[in-house]
Image 1 (cartoon, rainbow, N blue to C red):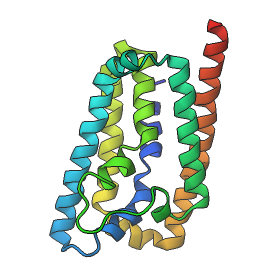
Image 2 (cartoon, one colour):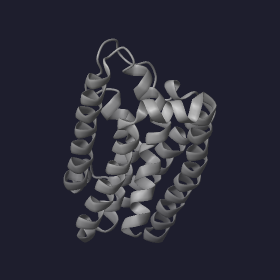
Image 3 (spheres, helix red, strand yellow):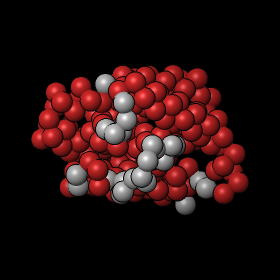
Image 4 (cartoon, rainbow, N blue to C red):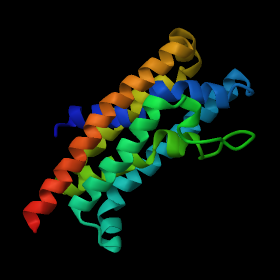
Length: 196
């Protein structure tokens, strides 16, 4: 996998266009300046979590004794479930109800940006080719930067797309992610069968 393909995959997994209406809705009660500050803070949290998973992924996998095929298959399953929810549910229902008040860490940073599928993808990239970690870090930064641009303009994106447009984009990304998730699962299954 190239840096560009990894960045595109992470961008699809973090789904900033589909998340823009959720961000706009959850922060609609805040003044415009405060909204941007909260989004920037949450994006910083999300980036920190994703980078931590990139560098601590090996230790975590070793501690839990998780093999690469198991991680690939589990990541594929989690990604598939989220993709199916993206296709069939409204954006605000994908991750459930948010707590009242100004969001802090949850649900904007985690799981909307740094969700289980994004973290599983990062762990899988590092597990498959650990020596390419600088490339994976670059892919994370590219995907995060593009997502940050979209989310910081969440109000404008939501207004431009409209409710139906946002749902259409969300479902299109869900369809793309279903194929990625199936491929992840099949890759893990093939590797498991080769090892047995």
